[in-house]
Length: 276
Image (cartoon, rainbow, N blue to C red; front, side, top):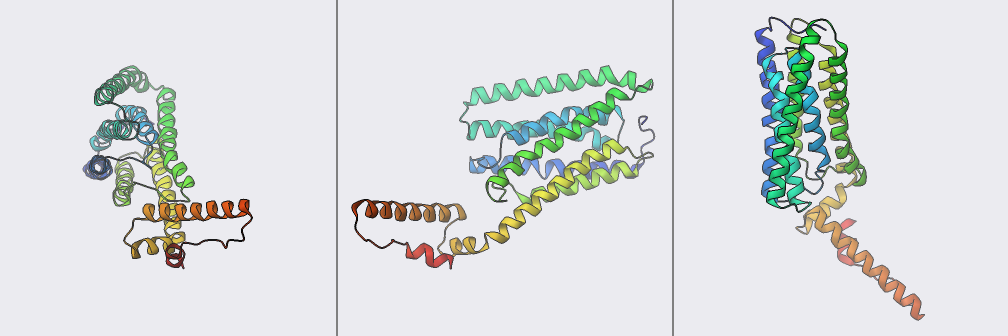
């Protein structure tokens, strides 16, 4: 596919909306949420790292294809903010020092910028002469990395029976809309770029799956969440209390069995009653 020429105004507008919705309304609030809670448990550091890495070939492809300006700058902004999310995970959960975190963030940002600039300078002239293979490979790599970047969330959901902990679904919804508008901006251009469209479609499909999987968890856990609400606890606090009660009961049973005394199985009436 040859580089785009004479980008329609409608494509520019849609691309700008997609950038604002997908970047400023999803990543920045996630950064703010991490900073406020000082906790990124459930928000795997691999997730923002892979997305930031994916943004490098994504940016190379969008710029070389001369997409509308909103879509061209989207990967660069997304890359920088994703690295900040990654740094927060290392600082809050992995307990890196401020110096180590900031140095790592600076180095990885400069490295990514240098790689992207080098690839653009190296590939664009050859691409304009008609050799599309290298840039196509770059686009495919970007699509794969974008998909892989969401897998840690799905893996975390699998371990929590579908729950996506510490993931803000309001802003994930806006991110989904950002992908929709970005895809529409490509449709509005003179020529629709199939590979560029796939990049956004991949994100949309996986995000739909994340929504559905979390929705299934909400349905399955509705009784426990209602019980936690009745006693003024969070879901995690209630689960921890229930698990501790079960451990105490099991420990008591084990002690009774070893002593030979026919002691009945103890129960925690508060927890059992609330879950009925």
